[in-house]
Image 1 (cartoon, rainbow, N blue to C red):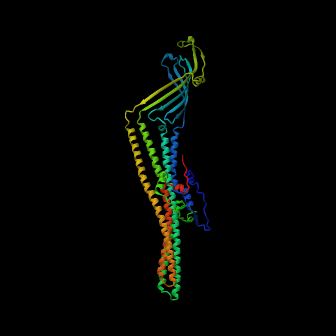
Image 2: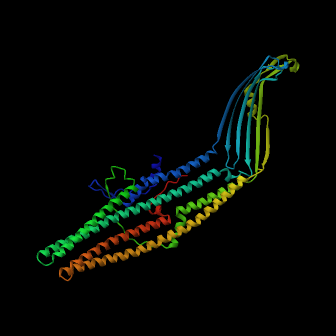
Length: 518
């Protein structure tokens, strides 16, 4: 399909293969790059949105068709037979035959004018008396040129439909680019959220194993009379709670996996839907500090919505100039040049007096003679004219001009409003990145401290200086700290992705090239 071919052009550098294969047929390992590539190729929303640039491109083709030369050909024959109403006609019934053909080439030019090159040829024959040439052949080669000087004149006015269509195409392409960037961010967010759910399940499994180890230890100590049976009950309660948490975590993994499959358009594919997606990438904490001024400079150039706003202003400004031009009077310069040729059988009368009605001979002529005279410019004729047209009322055109001016002012206000929103968006994204850098460092330290505190408490339990309650509490705190550290790292990565989207640089960050329709 054409749509799928265009979508496939979206990915240029995503040629990475799957990093590892699994012996389990129900497991599908995917990197984040793999997921983005599949989403850009298969996402149904993108498949829908790609029609907009295609349709805008077709509008350009339609507008350009106006300047394609046209060829007209006409052929006709006519025979008339009517009673004679005057004795000089010489026959009871006057029969006339007439046949002609013509062709013309018409070409519109970018300045708003047009020229026509035409050729007409005819043959006329009658049985009436007193004819000087019968049959008669005629041919005319003619050139006509018309150029508006005021209304509808000039390169911009002549190409106005093409210019507007090209502007609409650029707007459509920037809107499509915005959809692509949103799709990339959605896939990144869903991918890392799935990874977090998987890592959180691992942490909960580790916490469960610690609780089970402590339960087994308590049972042995109860058997030797070192602990009260109540400690076993407390440990069993914690094990049950952590098993319930694991069940909830497994459900969350399935939900986020289904969501990722939806964005990759895998949910309806029977060969892939049963498989479990295993994220191959791992979060990597690399500090990336960017100031608001730097981010804003990038955003003003690359954000698709701002570029669409500016192009929309340009388009509306052009439409206003078109509407203003329509209020001008019409002043057209026209020029015509034509070369006729006439030939036929010249009737020779006695004493060169056709009124005698005595034919003494015939000087034959041919259609080729008439055509030759026309093509050799034997007879030159030309005409130059200026035509001024003053409308008695221009209420409609003035209303169109006022409307176009209001559209321009509206689009200018939309740009200013969108700039403010974009500044807020970029500022929030920059601040969020800075905040998550600090969160990662803080939660990493918290996890290290929780690890050390649990190890110290377990040593105290071995020598009888603490109770199981505190060990279980510190196990829970360590599990929470591990999960929170992973979450903070993923939040930082997502904050970078949001910053890329806010600046409009997601395509460059992921080496994506969009097909440019022109």
